[in-house]
Length: 339
Image (spheres, rainbow, N blue to C red):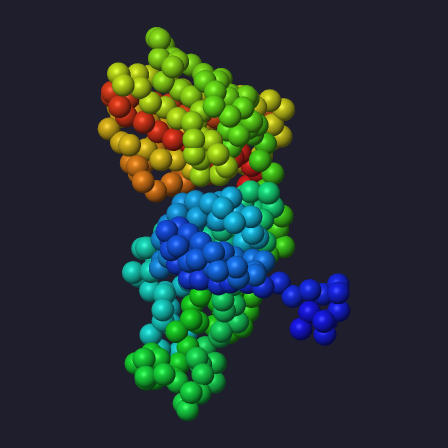
């Protein structure tokens, strides 16, 4: 086929697995493929957040795959429900259980938030290896004939033996074929991070990462340092000490244009602290805080949404008031104007 298309239209070879959040599966399978000398260009993944683990596990898997195999990454299947209603009276694949597991409301706004988050996650894959995503299936409307297949070709387990469309509430169009506002994400650029060294990669192992300040009311500055590995790249910010401690890391941004911003980060947290949170202040309003959830094994995103900046400045930071041995890890911190 390469020869038929000509030298300037070489066909990319994609190897595709499901379970996009399962790093152990991907390492096992692609290690075997590489060992056998199979030629391929792109690692393809299916990722549905209600079936294929958390967004944090997807992020960790994507970054690890790039570092391990130096291949481009493509999410070749993804979708999320924009309603819990059923357009054709045939049981859908996405309902209340999937909404709860997916973490976004089954609304157009929830679907839009999911797609933006997925887009930004792919854009953050190291070295530009994140190619993008394919929504499956954006136009599977509840109309006659929009089935899995034909009566003759269906499998015994297809929807209990009934031809139908179980996907009509995960499309990018409403039941009447009108485009949903989710589609605006397709034309939006990924937002620009105005924070410096949010991935903590600039200095390697260090006690004071470039761009960040450190504060403690006592002698606990040694509880803050950069360690490895991170969820994006090689390094992350860590708070830990074998005695009780209080410490924070912060960054002050100046010349911030007036507007509404989002502050987000990926975290791991042992739990047990008196307090552990991300904060934003000096923005022209009262301080905003979001607690870091206990999650010692799965990277979890925390965010401060709809932060109105009117002072030209913004300070963001991470604060720990901890018991001996408590810890947090922080990586891929971003501040950007909301769209």
